[in-house]
Length: 196
Image (cartoon, rainbow, N blue to C red; front, side):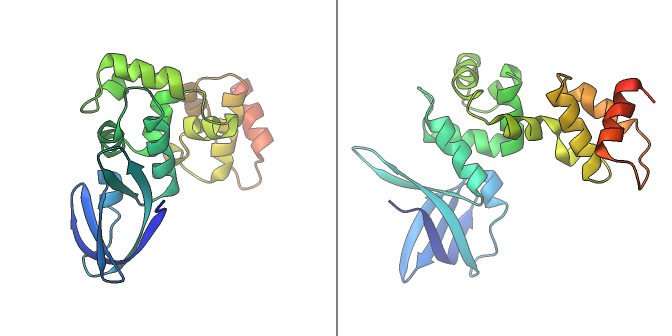
């Protein structure tokens, strides 16, 4: 099995990349999220690979990050979801957005992806929502990228979510807090719970 390709990026187009490895050109189909991270043509590149083998073909799927490749393989594990739908999912939503949609059972968001209807979205959610560790789920739901300030706010939001608060409520509670240089995460959580 091929797990990665490292060489010169000969050509790239949305959805496709060709990597020259020792004089042999390997074509890999890539989601748009990975395509956006590819360097200019002629540059050195390393692409993580999922080698998809069937009775009639062999196709290489390329990814910029291990998280993308892991999400791709998780999607493939769902009955009725093939590589085209998995690539479409990663092209339509980021890994974080996909995880959030799965954990929150957001059928509408998943079915907004081209090629995924309501029934397929429901099947994906049922089969994958429990595949994430509690820590991974908490971090995804905390929306680390959306909280201003330092990591104490994110940690406080994670703590509130672990106490049973919904993601949006925890974010609002934490964003409303006044952050002082000496304020600890525990103090932030207490302030959020007491409304002070």
